[in-house]
Length: 311
Image 1 (spheres, rainbow, N blue to C red):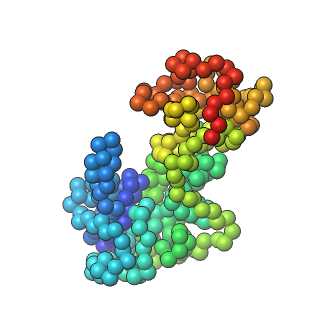
Image 2 (cartoon, rainbow, N blue to C red):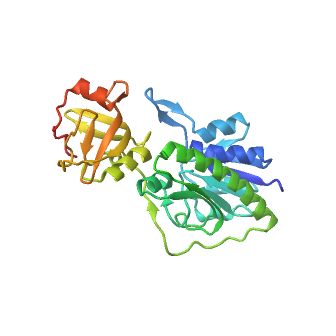
Image 3 (cartoon, helix red, strand yellow):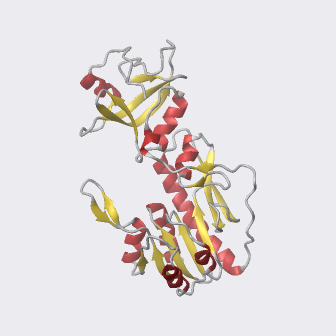
């Protein structure tokens, strides 16, 4: 392995796993770029990103610019004299002068099998769509949205029980392994970038809280995937009276009666969908502890046949 002088640009825990692997592999991390500290949690205290925290623990300088489009930011980056920059879920667009500054360019750890799921939320969108597999692509960045040529890929299967948390962790570890191998290959000249195919392009739009709203007019299979894909964030929920109920666990069930979507079918919190039914196995009222579906119904005293609030 040839140690390289790198900048690392990333923000969440997914990226921190990659940064840790690069440090452990013996590369010189000249500087880390991350999103600025922001208020978070119930106390709204200012918190550094996971990448920021790790970099400071390892004694690596950290920069948190709000933009990389200024001449000053670009000059500061160029002055680092980098062999390469590694980018993973950073959160800022890299303008062309930044992309051109490192000797070997900028490499991105992207959590999908490109060109499928370009964009901000590839892990969640793969789960929501019912994909049988996803993975990580290491690509050389260009000015487009995840459009650059590919260097390495690795696959991860998605089962009928895979959650967003489990998939995130598996992809983070895979991405860390692949970026170390990709840098070795790029430095040795043994990896040739391959253009992405024009067919099969999909976009993983950024998630919003509204994506978590349950819609009984979707199929049970879609709803069950929604629960696995969107916990812990943005979370899955439905309104019941004046309360917003969080859904933390669910499983698909049958609807032999053919009841209308949104109808409570039994004492286990099974709700009819447009196709099949969904049993809400773990739910949480505002300010309360999470409980099983049957315990929830005992507290609410909803009779079978009740029509839950339509979205």
